[in-house]
View 1: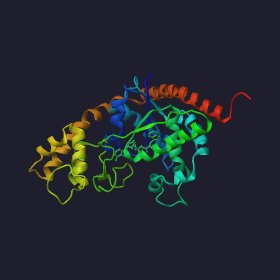
View 2: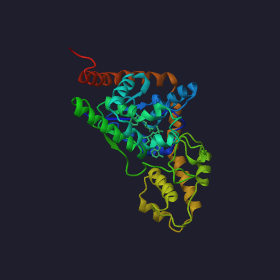
View 3: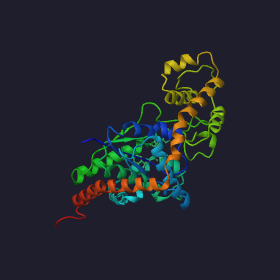
Length: 328
Ligand code: AMP
Ligand code: TRP
């Protein structure tokens, strides 16, 4: 039996190269080695206000992006979170064993809640419990994500271990898969922040569907630093970030890249980086046009039917172990 992967992204905003380099590319690479489940987590999206029509459209668009990135629906299971109601059910169960204190420590809640506890949604607070439910329902071994999800993964592991200890083993304890390079692509405008879908400055992120001249413009405007050499130096995060993107998109080694740019200026680096990103994105942007809505809906329906079988079996086991259902 193959080991299992589960991962997902929210159908909000537009996917950027950080999402691709930190997560999506690994989903594609790992999909045949594992039995893989890739989810569009629309129930996570509603923890912040969304326009209903936009959310519906973005949900389908995200499926299109998964496919264009190379996730093969004949190999992996692609589905929408709300189509499998067991996610919400298990989240409720896990919320009964999770502790306030461990959720209080989640840094994403502090960021997204903008530090305003009085106004922040309860769903935003319990968001990591729903994420744990997503993962644990599928007896997942490996969760490929970017670095910002590491803390959420640790909570998923803690909840699995706690349940298994208190009620008997129902869950596989999942491991994160965080790539050594690319797990934290930084904002082009402020290297103290990660590249983020919700950044209000559009120049901070390169979106997967950006036009070539937009890509070139954003890279040209990217902040650099006061040094002049083009080397991989973590104490110069802006240049390090640009070089990391270049490295991942060209496949050239760090050493090759440093030799290549020796004696050259930042302007030169930016021109070549823009060319590399545009070139890398071209086949992806072509493929996105290939999938019509009817085809996508069919894939998603099939995916949900497959996912539901596994999710239901886990939830039945959980309910039985807790005494919620079962023989008296
Ligand atoms: P989200 O857009 O928040 O649903 O994220 C989808 C995936 O992309 C998650 O696995 C994130 O960890 C990953 N991700 C988001 N932002 C970045 C970034 N700036 N660098 C690397 N990975 C990221
Ligand atoms: N919280 C993740 C993010 O914002 C999305 C997500 C929800 C997820 N459920 C998941 C990722 C389960 C991996 C596994 O990026």
